[in-house]
Amino acid sequence: MDMYTKALNLDIEKIITDSDLDGVVTAAILKRWWPDAEVIFGHPGNLRAGTMDEIIDRKTAICDLPRHPNCGLSIDHHKSNEPHENTIENSIILWEPTPSAARIAYNLLKNKIDLSDLSKTMIWVDKLDGGSISIDEFKGNNPVLWLGRVIGESEENTTTILENIQNRVSIEEILELPDIKLELRERMAKQEYLNRTIRENLSIIDRLAIVRLENLKIRSNGYLVTAIAGEECDACMVIHGDTGANFDDDDNYPVSASFYTNSFIHKTGGIFDLTKLATNFDKNGGGHANACGCRIKPIDEKIVTDREVTNGDIDSNINEWLDIWSQR
Figure 1: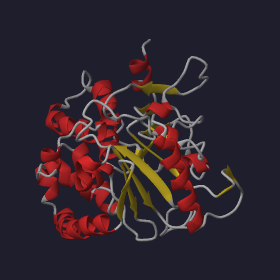
Figure 2 (figure 1 turned 180 degrees about the vertical axis):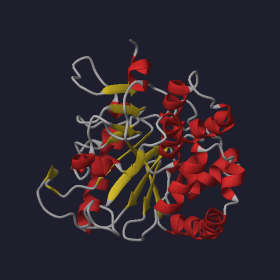
Figure 3 (figure 1 turned 90 degrees about the horizontal axis):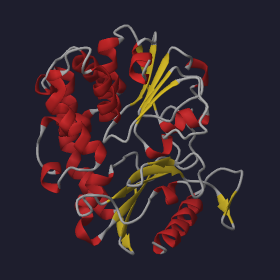
């Protein structure tokens, strides 16, 4: 029995997925096969910190997130989650080097149920999550682009979007739903503020664009940063989250760093494996060579220590990463 067949024979009752476009589309596809499964949004940090251990069992599918030893099904495409020959797991692992996790879910079910309504959406999910979108496309107004920007703004609206994708509602119709339309209008209005904030907090050192957004309650992906920085950078580093926060804080998020290749100029892959930065201090950091992240760690004399993170640690982490980057 092949892995796809084994996966489809599982009795999945919970789907834990990332709350971004890729994670939402992945879960929506799986919900067409397991319609009664409960969807729970997670984050790589939550899983790595063990805050979700109690709800994960063999009837749980984890999508677009780090694999958990107790889950029944793992669907992911991140390089840091690739199983190796010596990987011993009791769960079914569907790992493929696809542009998106949603593509794995799509491949899993495309010969079992009708997914034709998602064929065009999947192209954009792959472009966005796989780093193959052009700068003109990114600056355009494709509905999937704006859906991705609305997703994650609120859990309630993200759930609404997921359920509508599950029920074959078109992306254009989803964006016209009253609550989603309001969220979209607010997100569009916030875009200029986000652009301005990035410009004000952007520096470029040795062709690495660094944006300091910590303690500002805003986040940005690498596309926007590299679109603003332009051809002066080969990659970018985005600092976000709240200094001193923990994963179990309701309104705050631990200060972290995300790294992205400037895929607008490096269309087939970056000039440096950015996971070398993400895993230098944080053993739980990771992702792809061209898109990855980690938590800022407290360091003394270049060694990770056991204390709360301070603003000075952010500077120390960045300086060490710049040193590693300079050796490319």
